[in-house]
Length: 270
Image (cartoon, rainbow, N blue to C red; front, side):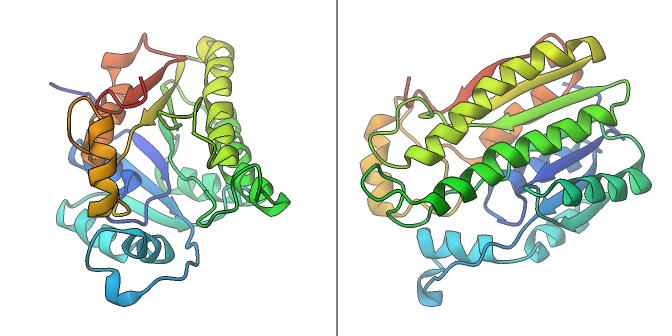
């Protein structure tokens, strides 16, 4: 299938985890000839280096604490055209500056993938333990950051526009944990629909992908065994599964798809 993405320009946020969704989307887009602006921010985490060879939280925390070196190596192997930007998407001035740099390098931006997300990495996101810092830090990235990136994209729009946001398949019903994270993702689903209505006149589509349990390096064997029975298709989602959906939504084939939340979950959380 010809996706007609050659020489389109995409900004993708949250791309430094080599096992992550952002990296998978970047590599999939690169194979289609998309010019890439990859945005990341190193998030400091504590982790046990001896445990980072196997999937689990230590491997995941190390990946998100790092830079783009491993992902960049894969992009070079594909002869991709790209620029890498370390930035804070929750800051309006940083967002404007990164768009300035991308515009100077590539011209108009055609595709925006709002993949970056923040979540509490401890036990401080339940109604009994919630703190103001967890609320502020989560919403700053997931809601404010996504909106700031979207607003700047719309202001600088060209004649082709695709915005792809990210939720989670359980955004409406996390079972008592991660209440701030799930609320932020539910907000993204809500404004995906609202923005889609507002920008349709500019030939911009706005959609949201809601992944199920995805192996981005954080699901160890014990957690996998607990989660797998809840997935009707019987296997964990892979970042490449998400990337294929992003490719479709970014392409001409999805020209009449907008305002949708698409679960890529293997049937999890239906």
